[in-house]
Length: 210
Ligand code: GAR
Image (cartoon, helix red, strand yellow):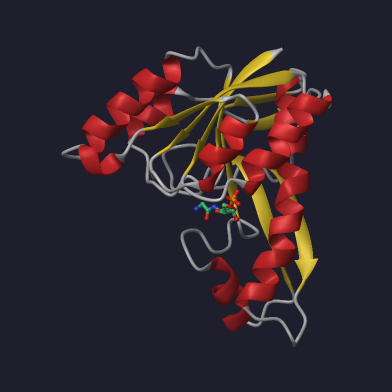
């Protein structure tokens, strides 16, 4: 089984979805540790309840981003992960960290990338009058929310939707596609090259964007 380290800042519902699938055997992997940069992240409790190492690395204890990320790399690497999963980890990462985990660092983002990089994605989709919205799992590169796409899921936006209702529906889909992407990786079906993302040896058409 592959070794997975999950980074969180909050509730950790995506962590839970992935954790459940590792425990049920759908994912050929084991979560070796969950690391939060925030002491109050509920995901730490989820990890503890599952008997997974729950580690706090509080960014406020560090003078700058570089020293925090250096300590983060050291902590992550102490678990020797094959895959590092950002699941609601609300920190911008240094290029050094991103390069260190090239090809084995995933993120999930609550929009149909390349639309709405950054924050407030649901509100922005509504204000733009979009018919469709969704979420994306992608490999992390130095371009913020710009790394090659692995899988997306889509919802229709209705006239009744507000940011909260959209967020709720998109969140449900996140819990489906994030474990799926992790499953593929753990079965050695996914890889990242200069050309983009390959799944079962086929280049994904939409995986090359920034
Ligand atoms: C998820 O909706 C995820 O897409 C988002 O944070 C939420 C975490 O939820 N991530 C980002 O916005 C990254 N920029 P969770 O803690 O319940 O998994």
